[in-house]
Length: 407
Ligand SMILES: [Zn+2]
Ligand SMILES: [Zn+2]
Image (tube, rainbow, N blue to C red; front, side, top):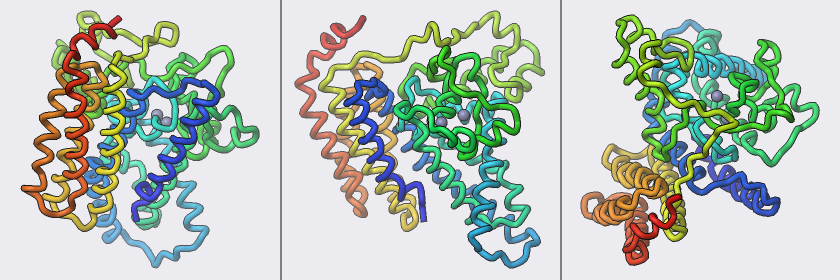
């Protein structure tokens, strides 16, 4: 059973609750473009990432069959110990992903949002399980079956969802034991005292034990994001952001050893010669300029409706994966991947993206001719196409509309 998929209705419901409280308190913790981009990376993580998680599970299962182990009794104690042990491994996995350039290139996706709300929790890389799974091998060697590891892993991820909010302050004694909204806000902040702090997933005890704990300080209000800002809503580029920069730096480095070692050096390290010739702007709390290109309101509404339909396509994809074949998966992934990419292009203020969307969805409306299985994806695509086509007259003078919005 896919626990993450089962939790999706709760995730969406809680976003609606947070939106309502945000509106009532006029807290200003949501932006449509940022929320759509965060959810888009989450949708890619669940769909494209499905393959890597499946390969990881197969590898664990194969290893389990050759490892010497006795009969395992699924007692409540076993589940509790597995849950705590998993979080211990998660702490080191998370800490390593913040510490080494190549691993940071995977985990950075979770930190790119310059806002902090429940949609930020959904920002996940699609290739995280490939390297992350190494850190849970000790559980397998000790004798926890792969299905137990996967289940407590899903529960761990589900727990982390609710802590991504600015609308809950401090929580008394819970701050001492558990990861909470307050101490996880610190983890996402780019202020100097908060860098590389609070790595726990469920228990903050590990941070207290290993010297990486930091409470939120009144004199340092959290500024969110990453020091080398992404400045794009593209969910595919979000996953390549740091690795692309590492590749360019590696290419530009003069010394051969720098070309190689840059991947394994501490996060942010660059060869001196590259730093001198290609300096990168650093995003600091005092000077942070949030990425927020202006977009006409009608297009934002269109993107939101398309986005809701794409959530339906994602859920359909995940429901049918266990019984699907390659054609079925592709028939869902084409509109999903293309739709997420085009939506983000529109939100980046690229006028031509509206026309590209209309052409793309027009082609997707032809999917039923090629594919005669589930109709949800092509049907949703056709609906979106009609909607975008309806908007075309509104955006005929799009050049003017964008020009007026430009600063
Ligand atoms: Zn992190
Ligand atoms: Zn987080």
